[in-house]
Every structure is written in structure tokens, then in C-alpha cells.
Length: 304
Image 1: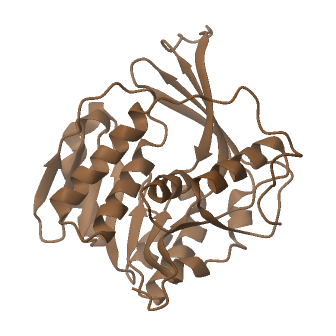
Image 2: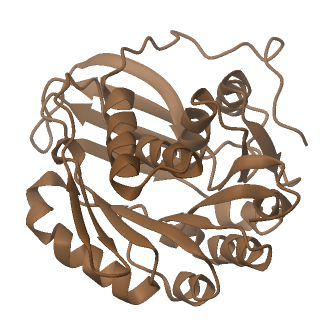
């Protein structure tokens, strides 16, 4: 761990504005469905993990791309500031904030449509130094930002800061694999749909073999999670039953719960249980979305 740690948790990811639309059931092709609930949120996982960790009392910061001066950008900035997350963004401001539209239904299905143009270009200029001044670095290793994520991993590794790496259900990119060889990986996390739960043990073993983390974790929605340690010890943790509102950000909340428990010195079983609880609580918490986005005059944007 860095001897000059300023943060408990430093998160790296892309930053985007998300709109979550809920329908009772997905329509068939060329048909429609009535939206019965709308809310706004953040994307990707890193910003949500940062907010959730801050709510658990961790000193948390986020390294991400810049957002625009538009209303979605101001909304994203407000959510981060309200959560108490320190923000380190690039100084290249895009004209339009990256965005996601997420559709969920009563069966727990989640489909998303992403407009992430220029995110990787913006992250190229990101100041990664907060990752070197933290007790733990959380890094999203999505394929779409793999080059910048590899640089984030290297920054943490050079400062001897442990890393919680989130693959976000993506395959392991060669740049990520190369950078990870020099890092102390506390955990590598990914996820599978519940219908593919039978593949979780094999996937956890594969990640453990390829990246050699202390533990490889595969989340499985309402089925909980499975984990494989470096020594080959398997773990399986069940999620608590709950009434789910929507599943956007579930994996990120799981990561935040994992990080908080790990930094508190908990053993692996306790840490995984805390992570599952955080994920379930996030998905079952009642949410009221604002009917309008903040007015420009009332909401400052992120630093230029």
C-alpha cells in the first residue's frame, strides 16, 4: 500500500449519464411497451462503486473521462458530489456527455444501449495519480477502455497499491493481462447471467489461472456469487431474498461492499457475504427519479 495514501478507495472507469427505463415485460420485435418507471443514474460500474463505497464511509475518489456542459453532464456531476466522491477527470471536455439507456423488466432482464464515443480518447489524458495514493484501487477493465485501464493498473502496481479488477463480463483483453502480471490483484470480478450459473466455477478457475489474483469472483445475480482462491479453495455465497427494484449497478455495489469489508480486514467469506448484501441492498432500495434534470444555473459541472 502507498505510504502516502490519501484515499481508502480510488476508482477508475468511464463516466456516463444513465437513464433506466422499466417495463413490465419486454415487447416482441417490432412492437412496443409502456414505460412504467424512469430514473437517472451513473455509468459505468466505477462511478457507482465509488458512490456506494462513499456511503459506507470510505474516503473515495474517481478517475474518469470528462463530461460535457450539457444537462446529463451536470446531473452526473451532481450525483457524484452529493455522494461525497472526489473526482479527478481529464481536462478535455467533450461537447456531449457519454450516455447509456438501460431497459429493465419485471423478470429481471437488463438490456443497455451505450453511446460512449470519445470516452477512450478522453481517458488517454486522465491523471492517474489518485490510484497511487489509495489503500485500494478499483479498476474497470472493459474492452472499450482497455488501453487506459491497463495504464491505471500499471499506475497502481508501481505504487504497490492493491487492485480490485472488474472485467464487467468482458473477456480478458491482452493489454489488461500484461499489466496485471505486475500488479497485486486482491480480486478479479466478473459476472454471468443466472441462466449460465452452471459455468461459474469453470469461469472462476479460468480467471484464477490466467491472472493469478488472490481470489476470482463470478457474480450471479440473485443466486449470489462463486469464488476461487489462488490456492484452489472454492467459495459459494448465496444472496438474501429481496424484492428487486432494478439491477442496474448491482455488480458495482457488490464491488463496493467487497472493498469496504476487505479494507476492514474481514476474511474472504465475510467479505463475500458483505459484497452480496451490498449488491442486494442496492437492487432492492426504493428509488425516486427526478422528473427533470437539474437546471444549468443551479448545478455546477465537473472541473474543466
